[in-house]
Length: 98
Image (cartoon, rainbow, N blue to C red; front, side, top):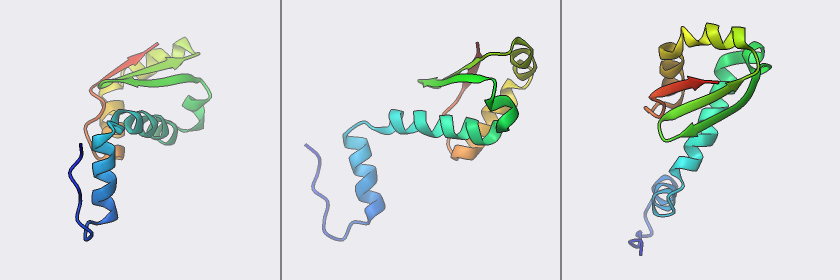
């Protein structure tokens, strides 16, 4: 059972406690990474993106263009850094392009 917070807790502290107790962080990270991919990659890449899935610290990106997949494979380290910088946490460690 979660510890009881006093009446002077901030809303942020209460939300952090709820997320921690209910183990919601992986789901929140999944949504945040999808949004970061959409914002960072722009319309050109997003039009060829079929699916973005975060499993653990591995980001799986399904693309419909083999040419784009090959081009993005050269910048995997940059993609990881951009997404982690956008989210202000180290969430993604590996990018797998399919």
